[in-house]
Length: 452
Image 1 (cartoon, rainbow, N blue to C red):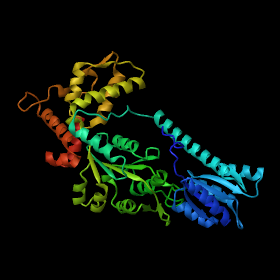
Image 2 (image 1 turned 180 degrees about the vertical axis):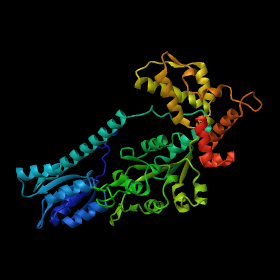
Image 3 (image 1 turned 30 degrees about the horizontal axis):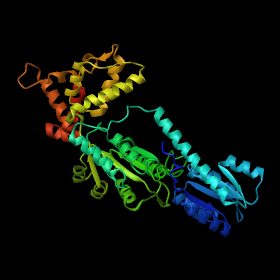
Image 4 (image 1 turned 90 degrees about the vertical axis):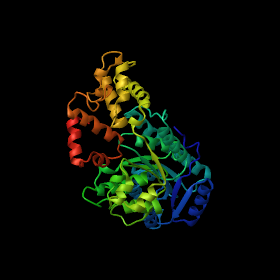
């Protein structure tokens, strides 16, 4: 865990006070410490700034002319729950301090205050942010659903992908990860974030096919209360939540055409609007996109914008399928065995020779995801110290003696193996169907029939 206090991180701070002298002196002090500061004198300007920009901290005066600054606290808590609020006032009392804390402020400063008082507040805010990051990391560790990723390979194609990812990670360039489904593109995207200079900032993952167009737009850019049926409260969106961090767009090729111009605008201008809101927001977020389809072909077919494709394709990294690196299967399988041993309280020491041979010879059309499922199943069913071939899925075992033309076997077995190999070597289902000379619906039925 990276300690944000030690990194002397810049905070984005909003000062809300009707006294020009307070705004000026406090702003100069905070900027002198390396922070980014905006100052306003009234409630409406404060709401406008908070709507257009992401702030980490607000210094809020309780008396803003005739307006009551206390009423801003719940509004800020609703629209920007990540922002920490420190109340400042010349009319200090125990009652107002208690009320401010109850409404959601984290601290209280009585005027006049000294620079040391402000420094203590800043330190406390940094500590709170650090604790929030630690809690998030602990939650991630608790629900961790897989073994630690392995970033090594015996194969040039995979070595190249890892090297390119490590070289590109420190930059802010958009990265496009390509490769068949299940090859570990999102795992590599997380690694790129961890290798980057943004590794102490939030990482957000969005699966483009998982949501309809309007909900996908809301998940990415956010929405305001009442923007659509079911929008019962404001949603800041992943872009705002991941300010200064990274957002991964998984299966970007499935993003609806209607949403693609809005993503393009954000890439080009770093500007966007929440659904139902006319205020333009700005954000500094690094994008990583992943896809298992040929985006250039999607452009030719009118399913993907050409200008968006070229903006995404700054650094393209291809993650090869598992069938192209069979010797990596053993390393991955052993790592998964260790993980599932722990999850299932078992002490299996390894794989029988026939089982490992089957794993390495199998085509793995589902790639690492399919391998993970096979190892988990074998661990659960294993009652000895080694996993034998009998514990592997039935469709994996025939790989020991792959059928050949002329063998005394049913025609269906030849067809099954041929479809399996074409799927493993194709970049998409459409490409596999084209090679096989059938439509996608027929390919889907055959996959279901053969359990591929």
